[in-house]
Image 1 (tube, rainbow, N blue to C red):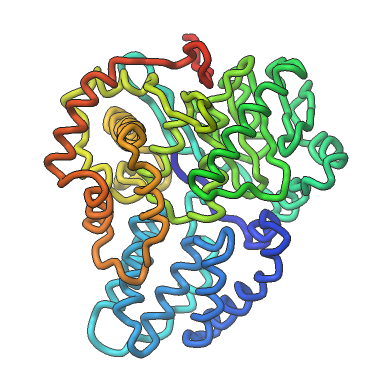
Image 2 (tube, rainbow, N blue to C red; image 1 turned 90 degrees about the vertical axis):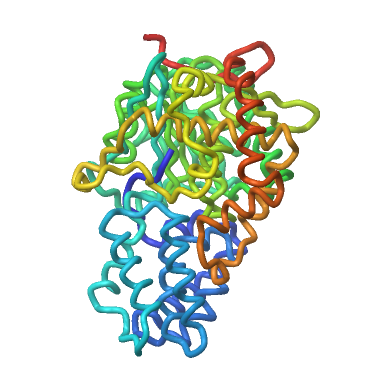
Length: 457
């Protein structure tokens, strides 16, 4: 659903890259060092090149590029645009929202700009708050949804996280690498690019079925969206219940997660944790999208990220394509019909639109019904775009935006969507008419679909 813990050292991002990307890491180090030394004109070219590399789109990079451009003659307007777009594209803590907003406003104002303050320079690694790594999920009950973000209980040494990454060419190392951190009683099974660590009792045949489902899905993400998987094993922790998800989060990633969390993705060690019974792998598909999309589209807007990820949590593989189907989130919209947000508000809202003000110390989200209908709308709008043949075009248009040329992220986002569909009012009307029927269909765990394990309370 959202980023939850603090970003870790850049070395972990380097480790997750394909081998040919390692040669570019010097561009990052060169640009960052120039930026720390307030040599903004020298910092800009290597940072720009790094941003085009795998995993290069991050708040840290965009912040350095934006603040640099603000201090380069003739680039000030472009720098202010980049800083403004950070507020729409990324999950930021309240403190860092203020930091980015303050820099943007100084850039927009008249007069000569001083260098970025030493305090802000030292806070750079904390710019990606609330975690560019782990993402928490929400579960819809019959009437409501409860959720809060995961909270970090302890920091994990970046070297330890890097140690967990095993190249695909070294599969024999996986069991020894994961044995010490695997839950008690877990079974480790490597199938292709997947390192399964299961306490949910799957047989080898069931794990093979899940691996086939995931191979089809990963291949589809590559052909449909240009999303390339890393050259490292993806570690998949499977648990039979929510209590197992919470224990794994605590013991493996140092997180306290929501008591109704079904799964999450943790980028720094390329892993997911999910409640999976049998071969109902829908939560894995959801989390893998969050994990894999960061390689080429780290600045994906929240509504598109959540919409596409949740689209495939209940889906079917047909004629070489992963096809999203109506699911349990439709109940949220059917029950709370009058509370549904407009498409415009979903498309234009920045990350963490529902954070409660005055509660940054706890990190709790705002009114749960509002969050539930917002995320359900993102999912069903992605389903609508899929059925209209527009989802891939919308995704590509957002990915290819020039961050230095967007004056107003909200109006730009709405314009991109409506250019490929209908004007706002006509789009809302068409969607509402379609949704009246779609929201009342639920193919969760229907025959011949990728199912999703849901709590049985």
